[in-house]
Image (tube, rainbow, N blue to C red; front, top):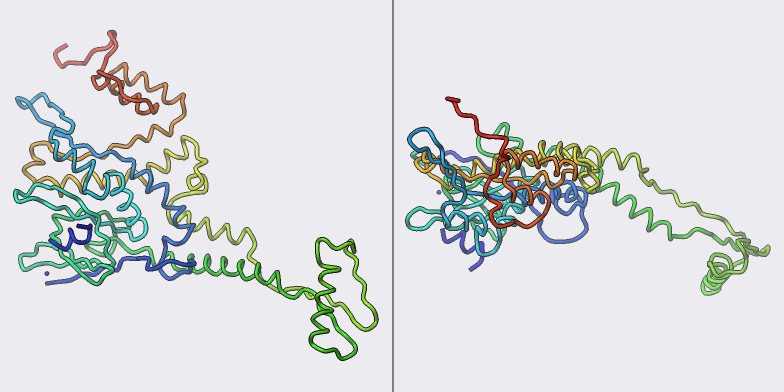
Length: 388
């Protein structure tokens, strides 16, 4: 059974959001198919990959005697499996990347939670919808009705939908579509690309015109043109760039007149698209330094990281479960992009128990070691207590 079948095996005031989708393959031209643009795909790929590398963990913080707090990581196996393998078709990384891609293209991304008979979450599926419709039922509970490419539709309670959004402005439920803001820029990119292609094609059209003073048969005209091209235009010609014609013919140079956009015009448009997606050339081409990536991560990835944590927490757990300290936390290994000097300086964090040895080793791209999950502390440091 595929993803769509599993979703379907699942109707006030209505608000509708039209998704931006790609139908079919072929040469990119602006018609809403953002993902077919190499510039758009390059802009969103670093963010998508970074969000895919976030590691989801189930955290449970339990207070003992109202004072001491015990923190347990992944205490329930079914939640850990749900985060690692949300459905039979993809891992947690793939689900996060798919949702991040939809978020970048539509400013909205959806995933449906499937529960068992006891109300426990068992699977999470991305919702590949072309349209989402908010429906308020008679008791004012919210549901989302999704329309799919095959024309079918299904409805989920909003409490079972993980909903990520950006540019959250006028609509009560959905983020604002980027279509209106991107349309002028994508029209420029499309026109520029087509102008370059046309100029390249026109570079192979007629460049020389032979004018004969007397009448000739069509086959003779063709033969004279072929001889001229062979003798004087071929790179193998021995004429060393010099052409000669008799008084019966006149050779006239034809200069193609085509508009080819210059590099500065193209770069300005590309920079505007980069700015729209809050990125830059260094991030797109993976030539960034430590400070460059840190700035990008804090601006683009961290907000989604927090939104993922809060959405997963409030949709997977009930209020009672959250009251007992259950939450989902998405962890980012942003320090993997740090310089070796910065990574080695984290030794001080390990010495003071702020990081475990295995957490430090993961920053250095090293495998965990036995006992490395236990915090260590230098002998000349100790916890501060209130009575001492």
